Length: 251
Image (cartoon, rainbow, N blue to C red):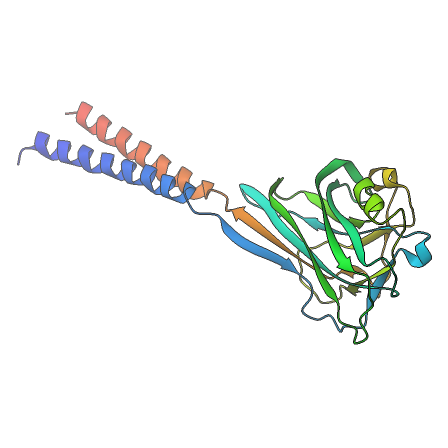
């Protein structure tokens, strides 16, 4: 093999190295989305709860703040809460709206990015069983790493009309956040019967005993591209090709 032929083989080999770096980077970017849950229900004792609609005169807004998972994209598919009527009533069915707003640490921002309705049975369970209320958010796109609040309310015009302009009393499973890992956030509420307060008034944090709402939220997340590895592979290929060309030019 001549020296010239050897140099050509070296250049060819280095070109393949650079191509391998590009292909590896493309493969990393094509990593499939994965599912993850926020859940703080594991240690709930069954006895702690936060009241909602006390005596039909207020506290008609209750929510849990959270931070959307980090990544290239973060979509919320659904969230669930757990409730029982505070008193048995003749409502038959209780209509409840679930809404998601952006959150700035004390108030909700702008309009709801999600709004949906579900129902609860109005008869109080004699054995303390809580009903699961699930809101299917339809793969709602969130901003990764940003803060939001998932709200429960009967003040939405649809739910208010469906409840005959009444304010049903509900109890929601909640607890202290001490020692839990659940995706961050806190229980927040408002003593109001005014729907416009949802994104205008400052919220009140729950007490030490009821500092988080028991809930479960499901997300679909796309992992970030491993930028340092991509840059290293690309840089190695460029440097190798430059070195080979200089060697060939020096012949």
